[in-house]
Length: 303
Image (cartoon, rainbow, N blue to C red; front, side, top):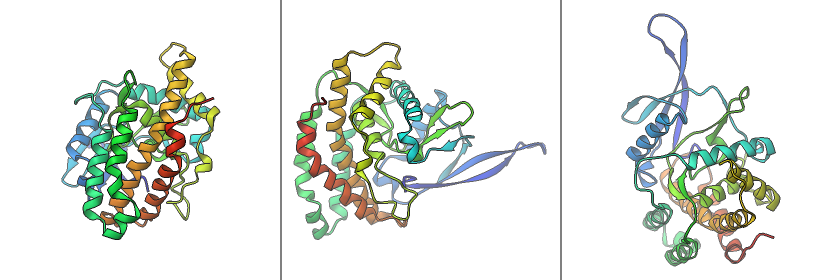
């Protein structure tokens, strides 16, 4: 499922003189992507990531897709995210990702995205759907979240915003991790990106019911603290306990924003995407989590 709006296939590519065939990746863009992100922005991000030595190289473009370098690594599975060794590697890699010098204004994009997607969802939904998902209430919810979460001195970095297992590849020999697929990448609070990654631990998109989320798999406080400590330590300095505590607290608050974001994404996708996936069922779970967690998250303090 979280090849969210694209599909891809592997093809052979000749080196031109009858020698060894090399693999490339052909990515075909999905329908309705313009509702979610600007393709030209995504291409610029892809090219900038390539210049930084991150992800695959861009080999060519055509009207509804592109050709990318083939990465000789395996895509992670749902269970990999809970593996302490792999999780530690991801935490270190994510810190590196967040500190990349990327083009564009270095301002938080999250709130504009939420408001844009809410506007699109309202335009596509029937009155019954709008009522079920309380869409008329969400403008105020988004504004309240923005007011609560827009605190000074929080880390802003270049965020992936969709760090689920299908977007992480690992070389089994070197254990090097590559983060791929930058459709939703933008500058945001790093706490939001980590919150989104934690929420993705509830998902397994390779089951018979890929839309079903199991929030019993959401990492417990010890797992979250370990990830955050490794993330912060990867700069070479041991973080203060207060720094760890504040980041953990902010992550739990930004979980609310991730639920709103992907809940709206599910509603929109149900109206524009023909992929065999229960988008509305997925959206319902994300909104349920938002309302269930709201009071605890906004008052949370890790012990």
